[in-house]
Amino acid sequence: MNLLLLEDADFVAADRVVLAGRRLKHLQEVHRAAVGDNLRVGRLGGPMGSGSLLQLDEQHAELQVSLDQPPPAKLPLTLLLALPRPKMLKRVLQTVSAMGVPRLVLLNSYRVEKSFWQTPFLEPDAIREQLILGLEQARDTLLPEVIIEKRFKPFVEDRLPAIAAGSLGLVGHPGDFPACPRAVEQPVTLAIGPEGGWIPYEVEKLQEAGLQPVQLGERILRVETAVPALLARLF
Image 1 (tube, rainbow, N blue to C red):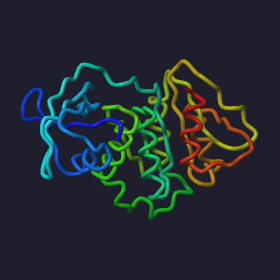
Image 2 (image 1 turned 30 degrees about the vertical axis):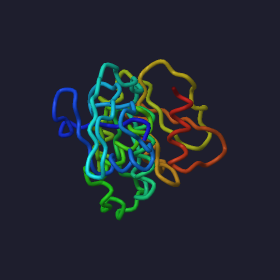
Image 3 (image 1 turned 45 degrees about the vertical axis):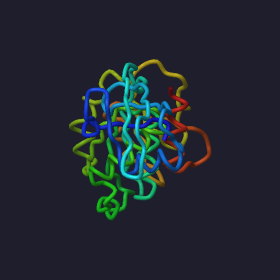
Image 4 (image 1 turned 90 degrees about the vertical axis):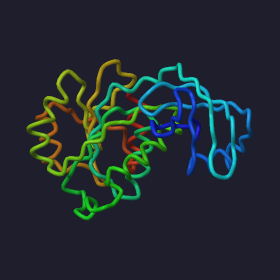
């Protein structure tokens, strides 16, 4: 936890917060904080700054906070991601949040197993938990927007063209395609497929919506590796 994230309910005054639970445990066991310590803090959805620890015991911690710094800028990106297997989804959500993706669309695909859509990790509270862990890691306060699309064809035909309009549309896909561009300076709409990749029909539909296939080389990467590799290359 490189940033202590504060929520509205934590505030007992304009510049005072009281914390318990997971964050209190982290202060005690990881930070080994003591009264008088200054910590990096940020208000979820708002600015960042510093907090001075006023009180600390087994039940709660009280801090006086000063919030006067903006969070880091988000990437100019909409990421379309075929729903990964549940255990991988947790890690990918943290990565997406930590790397500054502002909008994530979890999308169905032929190779996405139907059982994946039943995972409790897709519950709003479960998604939020993983996104917050990513924000804490990267020192950010702005949660990504997560959209769930269970029907590939209607989304790609009816909504994706408007989403991709005015951006560089790319499909990460192994094969005889151009190399993924580097250090782009424009908005990007990027689609990353499931384990095994998109099927040809899906690649065609994504192309019709304005996204062009690109590749990272001969190696086949897991989704959790492909996401940070593509984002780091693009931005």
